Length: 480
Image 1 (tube, rainbow, N blue to C red):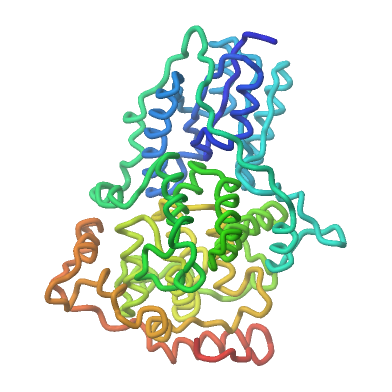
Image 2: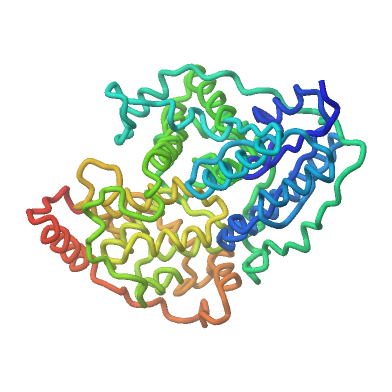
């Protein structure tokens, strides 16, 4: 057993429970040097994601300090930083948890090859997903392109119980110098909105575990029945932000969901299905790396969507004149998150009623979501736009007004986020005007805008465009 240090390279895995790489590092008996590298790829994150990362790093550094360890922060190209730390500490090994997007895989492969060429031990581990993307295969040996059989295959597998919380990491004799987190100014681009969005975050592993316990001991029972109603904020777990940054592992969530299901909670299985939907997104991204930037169905790549445009800017600002859409777009600007039903509605409105390229919306979500997830974001946008994995999606056009009648009959959600025209606007509705840029020139006392497009006309235009492009009758599944 060597007493030379081991570098534990953290990325989107800011936790100490059920972390195979950390467990493996601890098992070596070596001193462990936890490291986070702010490289160009990480700095390219959207404003809200960088901001949320900064909050997560501060909380994780405190968690490490509480067990006698320390988070070393370095800025620079990942391989160069890790080589510098190896030289400074005399480390003989570097461990990390795997990521699955194309850019991360390319970077990590380069790091692993270069470090091994130096005679170092460089190992990557699972932990970000329930199942590695290459471990699920169809009967023909290919990858799954439809969710239902993927769910059946994944749910039928047995998963190991979550590994326990690490309570101690052996420190090195001398700690390498760390940069100062505040000097990175990760929240700079949030400007005045940062303080407002921060109120709606529950940051860190302890908060994530508490959140899971609260949800699975109560609201999970009604999850399937109530999850589509955006005014019922307590009906969902809220774990998306914590899962996105690895402050909780998917096996921990799965195990809790399975316990609730065995205890008779009616909504528990559906909650587990949503967790596996995330797995499906990474399964697709691994096997189809173009998912992030190109239409998953290649025949849609030539469709004449509009590029960025003035209508899309009104959409971004929550000023389309369609209350359900605008409420959702303002919700994300204040909280950093958006209800899942609302995400589908705003995506459909942009890509179909406004005929705007799904990548315009995808980029905005990447900018404003604190729970941004590369695979889920790409798959979600393509699923709604009609160019992603689904049976016959091109004629699915969500009607925001119809959706509002069905899922916000009381108008509580819209009133919570739309201030104009209300005698006593909700605090959250007013917070949007505090958070949005001065340059937008918005005021809660102004008149609410007229609709950008007549919903029926916009829907008909989309269906006609799709039918002409497909060269056949687009069909109709009803006025959703």
